[in-house]
Length: 229
Image 1 (cartoon, rainbow, N blue to C red):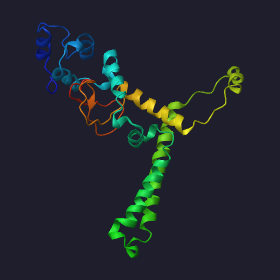
Image 2 (image 1 turned 180 degrees about the vertical axis):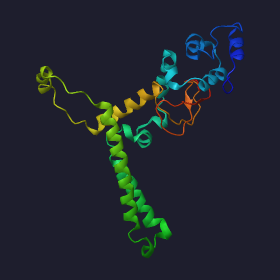
Image 3 (image 1 turned 90 degrees about the vertical axis):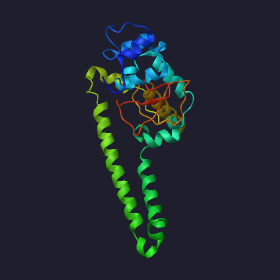
Image 4 (image 1 turned 30 degrees about the vertical axis):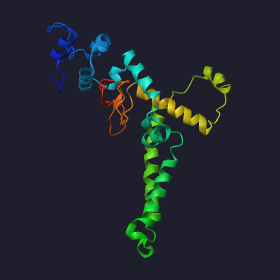
């Protein structure tokens, strides 16, 4: 049995026989689908040790709880915080390297050796250039990956006329980019594809989480009432 997950405790609480088949540990998602509304917080929590957030997202009630939680506007899902943490989803992400480079230059000018100019010299510019190079290389990797994922085979000639008359691309405004980004972050969260760090315990939504970094498909660890969410 993984971690603190105990079939016997769960079955006893609901009043099911100990030989119930399949036991929660063997079919946790289906068990949650049937009995989530009957389980207390301390037992719901244990399901996070044997299921992933994506697996649990097939349960409508869990998706609804996550969606309701996003409506509370948690700080970690707000625009500024989300753009900083998940810049790969932000159309304006090219600025990230420039901002980091500026911070490197400021540190060299003010923080390094007390900002003594005779020691700093070209250090600030050098660090800034290094940071921009690192970001450029990272973005090239991101673009290569996105290009591979978004590749569409060439259409037959019979389809070319349709593409010639397609609606021309219209550049999104900054406001539209922001709205699209926020929508995507919420969708990823609701479907268990986004790891976030939420400090407060919001028992009402059963969905407070504690995560160190972004990762697709990793565990969404919830605290309070919602670790299985």
